[in-house]
Length: 320
Ligand code: GLV
Image (cartoon, rainbow, N blue to C red):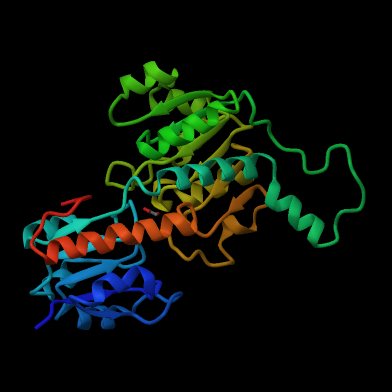
């Protein structure tokens, strides 16, 4: 009997094909609909491997109903959708897809920062909606990026890659991280700052930290009040790190100037979400790693990890 791989989302055939020869591959057949929990619960009963996305909540209950499960391979660098403690206790390997998405995600982070600062999506909407009446001295004026101070919260691989790009704009880089990165401080002149100092001094605050118990709600009313009234907050990590109600209040009360959000507390974010009603929010549907090359590279890592674990080998990119 072949081992069973269950894939929770319809993926491109070229990504899945290498698994088909050796394993029985079953796949949720929709690309834009999350697998319903009942279907997932049924499918995991016979699965030896689960290939998941960030939209799947892989709970203890799911894993406990999967007696054969050896690996959960998540198509993301983040893994807050998986109960790691339960996986560990049940002897299930969890893998993710770091490195291959670093540069692509950093590109988007800087793109969103620029778009928010210079009101790019808002300006395009003005043009397309026929609201462009004339060149106007102060219409759609934004904030300068060149030479500004960028504070990065979460200086991992993606944070560093974003900081290097920002150097091209001659930005001064502050960062806050669990551990100091003395080598990059020395090599590139990035400066470590306590969180409050970073918030006070930065023109742009870019969040690239993982969502953990420590970072949940890290940026709330108090932290937003510390920021400059001209500052822009950009979040490309997880929605839960920023308190959305407090962010809404800060944006409407002029505590900060704008925000760029690729992530939300609940995704997909409903179109009537208060933050989406604000002109000073530039919003994207969680696309930071979405280049063709990178998404296929992420899937390659998932596919290899599954083949390794089901073949009795130790995979790369183990989380637990
Ligand atoms: C996407 O959000 C990821 O964690 O890769």
